[in-house]
Length: 293
Image 1 (cartoon, rainbow, N blue to C red):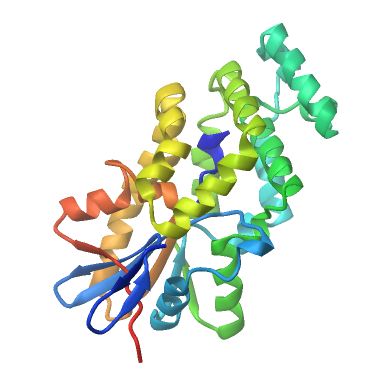
Image 2: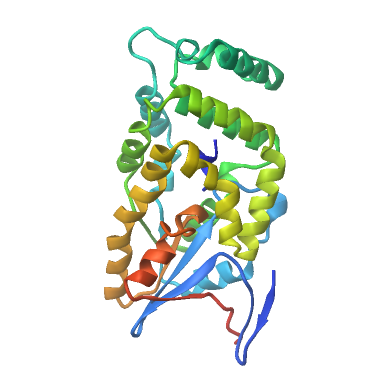
């Protein structure tokens, strides 16, 4: 479902000392201090590389890489087990009992078509099944979680020895997700099936919008329905996390080091996004421009 993933994301601009293809990367300044804030896509195809050169240069110029959470812990079997346990029915129920018969039948049909083990997965609540279905469909189309922008720079930092920090712990991530465990299963599965049927074109467009820095279009494509149909998910996964991250981002301006902060692109877009909030707090926000040697 859109609300679970749009963790996603040109024109050449010439100025006197730099040239850049606009993309989803920004330089945030206040006085003499600055950070780089980039929107990412958590899943990409091998063919989506190389990444926009702005990201590569900002990474080289930054002393510290800041990601949403600890990627090593988030990809560990232990975290996967904790998440599965949090979304497992504990009262003998299963997903079929939470869904209207027609919707359960539609879900079964899609699962059979994709050879998805719905029988085994029905012991989990709708949000977990939605995530699992969506990840499986992304992988079927060549998109991989380990191939996303965040994973790419995390691995690069590990190899080069660059300092890596996080905006939230994996425990906090799990808390945000499990607060949504009891959202109406019918709303979640209905939206999931709709998005899965059009995922190919949706992902293709989203990558294009991300590359071009067209955050408004990306927001319309990936977040508008979420705000309308499942506002509690939008509030928990985007708005609440942005509010928690803002003080941590502001603290970075007190240090002499330059940080490159990478978050899912939807955390930057709309009036609820980090860019809007930083502007409201007096920070200067501008697209990152590649500087020539």
